[in-house]
Image (cartoon, rainbow, N blue to C red; front, top):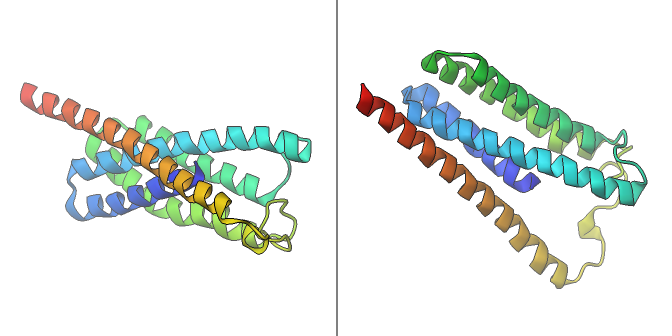
Length: 179
């Protein structure tokens, strides 16, 4: 789920930049739908991670750097969605959201990926002083499961996103036909 979120956020920021170069609303639609679906995957990741933490660490939430960084990242993009929905003018909404996305994406990467690797107090493998997964003697069966699962989550996220994009394009076309 986290891989799908990061992939969709990457696509979102790319289309936000393209929107600011062209001011074509179709690029804003793609960027916003990618961000919306990525928030869904982030919330699912936090929920399922919390269940996993309860059985692994004995608590639903710990003061772990990776958990808090991921939660901050999801909250930043929830704020993005709230910001988008608070503006009425489509052009202003698209511009403000694109600029927000360009600033939020590097911060998300810092909070979700960089800071947790630097923190010595993280309980997650591969963070700080903990042993990373690639240092364990894993057999190839785990890798044969892990990588297709990552690709499957990304593909499912992109499929959901394309459904939302196509729906938004149909609504936009209907509105332009009515005018």
